[in-house]
Amino acid sequence: MKKSKVVLIGNFDGIHLGHQKLISKAKKIAEQKKQKLVLITFNPHPREIINNTEMDLILPYKEKKLLLKNYGIDKINEIKFTNKLSKLSAEEFAKEYIYKAHNPSDIVIGKNFKFGHKARGDAKLLKDLLSKKVKVHSIDIKRLDSLVISSSEIKKLISKGSIEKVNKLLGRNYHISGKVIHGEKRGRLIGFPTTNLSTEWNFLPKKGVYVSKVVISDKSYQSITNIGVRPTFNANSLQIESHIFDFNKNVYGKKIKIYFLARIRNEKKFETVEKLIENITKDVNFGRKYFKNFR
Image: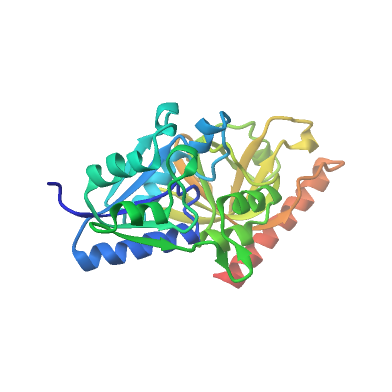
């Protein structure tokens, strides 16, 4: 018989404050019982298969797994979600993928978490099915003050550029990551050199300028970041460009993370390059003032 474990189940798209509440509860139980903590999650997201549509995810799967490890999950059981699996009854899923696979002493899930064919599985079913052998903890993770905590609400806020609200609901600063690539070097020519990001993130904040921090080789730098198409230069391809304050190192090819802290303004087409320079100067001053006030 496998050693007993504490099992946490969910999609964990975004790993927001609600998800962190579940992780915290599961970790506490695992520590008390001196057991390993296992997370059961899915790839792709079940809704992609059930609704036959691609979903915009807050975090790519690889990044989600990295973050979950940072939050103290011992093992991630990422189940490949298929059409066949979507037809499995909730009872069969509970027996095969939860009980037999992990021999849980405790199962932790969000109050609204559903599983199995036609989403018939919930906390009540788990309690009815496994309660003699397993303790089921069902936790409400839906609110923070007057704000609704959900991945869909966070995605709406990201789309609006409401980064400070996003960070509040995530319980950490929203970030994207990728590799620094060569751009057109226009920023350098106008006195504001930038790092250009190539990323696999397909869900990005609203176009505009943000106060940001760029992390390179575990070192954090103050910066501003522009997401947009550079309309002043009549360009039309989306670029993610960060101007790092007082920085002149060559970082081409390096992996970086950009943390978004506050929104400065919308993307705008300026009549002249001089007007653009004037506004970037204002953006930089805004950023420097932000860091001075919030350091």
